[in-house]
Image (tube, rainbow, N blue to C red; front, side, top):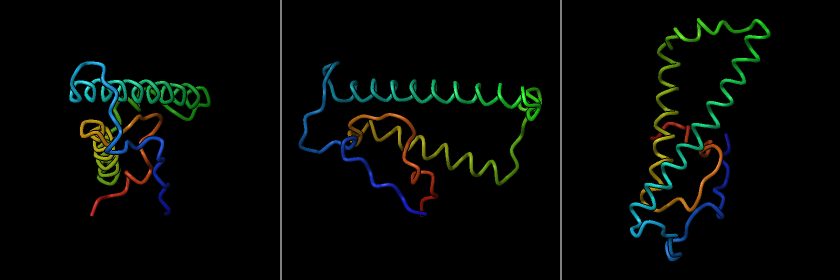
Length: 114
């Protein structure tokens, strides 16, 4: 699997000044992190609900069964890796590596770390 090249437009240079809205870089990063989370949450919730509606209408999904779903070991491990990748991407904001974000976190971040 090939990994996408990081977008230089979304990666801050260490010598670039950071935008400041709250007076301290830490507060600005926290605000950016919250906005990233809110954006990701909205997009994901919207897409998941649309898929649920479509699949239920096609008779391919029992929404009640979905509410009681328990992942098997392999599924739980995959969900855990994806959660860890998301948290890692989110924390990039706190140390100033992320200039701005939009959309999904990089696909290569889903790969297990060695």
